[in-house]
Image (cartoon, rainbow, N blue to C red):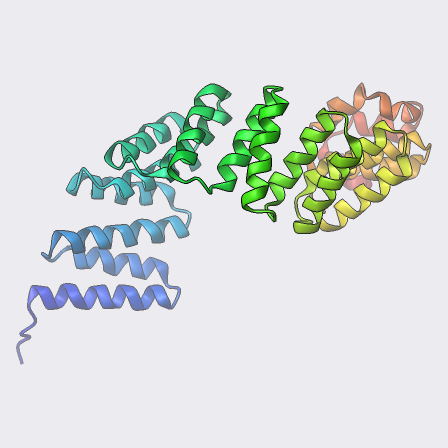
Length: 319
């Protein structure tokens, strides 16, 4: 019996197969059948939808270059498809090509001048590149388009803090917290600003607020401990760092700072143990430790000397 399936039917069947495989977590097969669907003619809008699905699935599979090809195919079919430019930009950013990412984010924003997320990531890239004025310009554009964007306000505040403009930093972070009082990074940054202003009690208050919201953000524990260290309250710093390590067991700088604290108290065994852990997690601490005044009590400890002269594997073997 001859099949009477039309090309439309075949295309539709392959789309259904692709969707079912995707729902069953067979992503490779889902992509395979989406491509088969494209072998048969159909509406342009449906072609674009299929290609978007392919791009999304490749992205989920961490096959970024394949996802990028799908977005570029969308752009080839529909050059004004701002979502495809934006998607490609995110992939270029993850691939480490910031210049290309900027190019595609700008194209997305050119097509749709209201595309606040494109401006947000443009600002973010400029910030990472050290182009602070450009970053400020585009975060302000985000806020103009989306006045309740608490993350944009927070990021602006962070930039102003880096530029030592603490009044503007305070203003921006305060607005961020006003919009979302549970945003832990804004609470953390307010702690940073208060620390810069030598208002240590307020700084600790905001670090505590940040920790209450998100115990898995190790920098709050780190910065809080630094205040206690600078005040000579070493035992308190150790308590804070120990709590931080409990929730963030791979935060190498928490181990390193606790090692420094133990060394200050001449608790050399504990200091050596933490130093080993810190260096296993981040071997770069070896060069830092060599000239760190906080570790001077370990200078005559044979174990410390061995740590500074051995590689990561040797340190692991000593544990």
